[in-house]
Image (cartoon, rainbow, N blue to C red; front, top):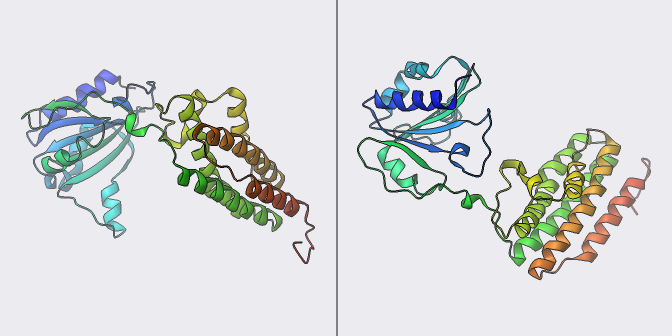
Length: 293
């Protein structure tokens, strides 16, 4: 596997030797001082170019970066699927190489870079041949920190949780495991994730990022809470999903109460109690039942 230094040398030397490339910018995790380095970190690179057409017309130029496992051209895919694209301003190459390194590279014109360069605070200028780029503050992930909830957001989160949780119960009674898992992971879990992220924010004075998909949550939660959170991820088995629902319900209420206390919000105990009891009733409902109640 090529070293980090070898990869940066390759990326920058390619830019130096190509008159069409006028600047090099790095984004993503390698620009984030709070992300621990590991062997799977991508190189998120933007080449500021004089034009994009020649880079798109002849893709052989990317062979300099190494032997591929697989490439993806997301803008090309969007175009083929009928989405709006702007090849004249931006084009992307996602490249996984056979030595384990990966580069997510975009070629962008100056006007687009100038529009976007200050909007992402995880930006590092690696090269600027013409001194056209503005001065950029040291990179920070503060744009990704957990934000404080307001009363309306908190209330909607609680209501959505207890409302959609009952879809899981209904699906399980019908033996519709895929339906139930879909609601658990795509409707109910996002509310738990939101609530537990706010709790992590409280613990850190809202100066933390929990990362994509909550991958850093375990850094901020007590081990006991983290273990309970992991138990909300069930196998695709009916009883396992039932058990995960009730673990999730207990955890959601416990964390929601902590958040409510911190911000002096009102937690709707009655809604939660009725929803939990109704879910338990559905769990005990015979398969040949003619009425729910």
